[in-house]
Length: 97
Image (cartoon, rainbow, N blue to C red):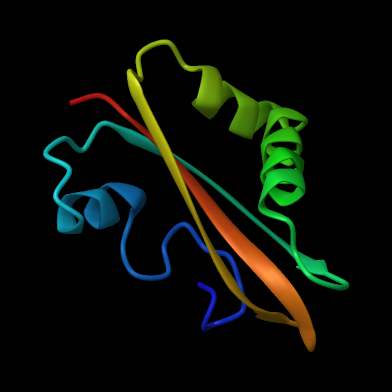
């Protein structure tokens, strides 16, 4: 997603396909995505808080994160470019083994 400079839940398969390729044994997963450009040097603390707030302010993403049937959660971010600015792309995955 970072290299393509766009967000997509289906760019290289479905979220459960990516989870299986990464070694996650269950296909019971949820995924939230976000990206934003940054002026200046990114701060991990402030940017992480910004992404979480962005997800929690969006009802469909919030429901994935708070879905009680999921028992595990993980997140990862990559720095890239977006519209010629520094950008962070973040993915949050929820799951139940």
